[in-house]
Image (cartoon, rainbow, N blue to C red; front, side, top):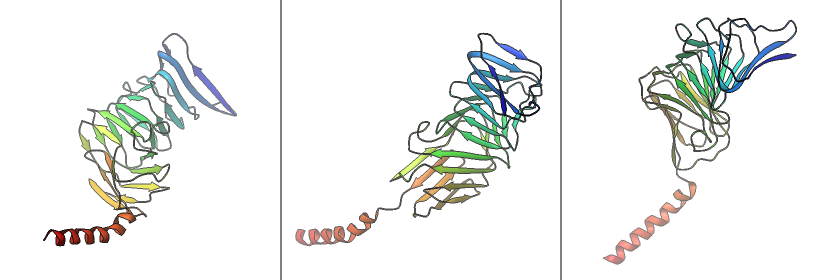
Length: 259
């Protein structure tokens, strides 16, 4: 069983107490008051999910949601962790997901899943992906934010680490394509240990600032940490290779006639 604490009214609120699990069930927290701020000042211990569908959920200097399994921030909503001393850290067993905004410096030790099938997650502060982090990007097309996931950093510092997993909804690509997974203008450091994919395109990119590999179809994939871009270079279509001898023959005949 689960119990749910829903926060949503016409006033800004501060809660200094502690939200805990029940004796026989998990507790969860939902913030759904647009334009309002709910501040948590207690070291909450509930293990259910935290969902910010509207408004701002703010962690005070002593506020914590360290045991909440999945933290979801919807588009237009904000998780404000700027008051957390030393920066906010997502635990190794936690997941952060959604298309909203995280304000304040953040370190990801667990799972980072930007987007809402797909979407953009914005960080208004530094983002550090620790060695235990696993970042998952969903790609279903070539339009950023609606067909593939992205992370927006602005001028804030980005530090890569851990692994990044790419999931593809279908085999849809042709030609050459660049996916702007991380958009930032600030400083960048670190590298992923590996970038791997699943489903329709299978590849593994090993460590390095810019590395590449071929998938099972022969296409070339690359990731550049300096730009945050995932690159795709398609192999020539079989029909192109089949037509090449005919094109060369035609060219030779044309040159002979001109003589």
